[in-house]
Length: 336
Image (cartoon, rainbow, N blue to C red; front, side, top):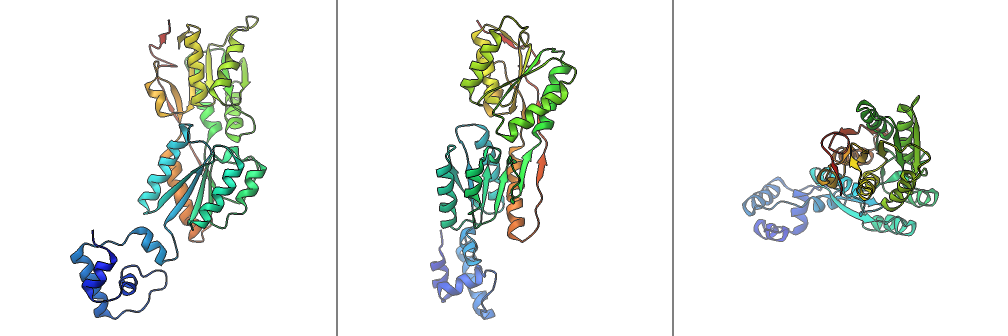
């Protein structure tokens, strides 16, 4: 593969001249027409293509985007990361991914590290979980910042998020249409706007119907334990359907159904939210509300580019999509 040095030698000019011709930057340096044509001819003959990052450096841009995620072990976040990377790649940008594993110290360090690497912007996924200390750390960012998810308090940065309330309403409507009467919502921590909005969407559709919300920490272990406690309560009729706030909680509910030898969906229908890849391969397969990961990534990168161009950027809200599978309708299965 030809390098810029090879082109310079072939054209009989300096490396700086090749750079000025092929990567002129925001303020082009004058180069004689015959010299410029000689450089371009050498580049064509050698099939030399300047790298996007090299072109970015010439224009005082690195061509790098920092992506900060709270937990890569949660299948939801890798899906979004792929969406961001696909959109960035289409714009000839590279992505540096930083996993905070939920630690404030790591978030602060990554913001500083990404700025030291001269990223053009930072995209932060999982913004619904940000607390006051984390928001304070983000205020020290000196590069454009875009959030995926809506924080609990107003912030000065644009965000793109999913219509969690509307998606929860669709999930609940789905169970109601199928004839289930005692629909329980297995929710996550109320400190997250995502979990609050999904609980509200459930409540919107359950007006005039028996409703019940069980709050969990959001981990499958806690969701399993809290739902087990509810199903063991013989003083109340058991739910015949569960709308879980996340697919991780839905998987926990399916595991509990298996352990109690319940038929899904006849004894207990289950629907989740996020549509993680694993859901389609469970037996019975998991119904869920799919988040548009690719669109989230594309909108986030579009916001980054608009901010860099000095444009005003408004928040965006994207719709979730119902994916019907065996856990709510279909043959399902009894675990023995």
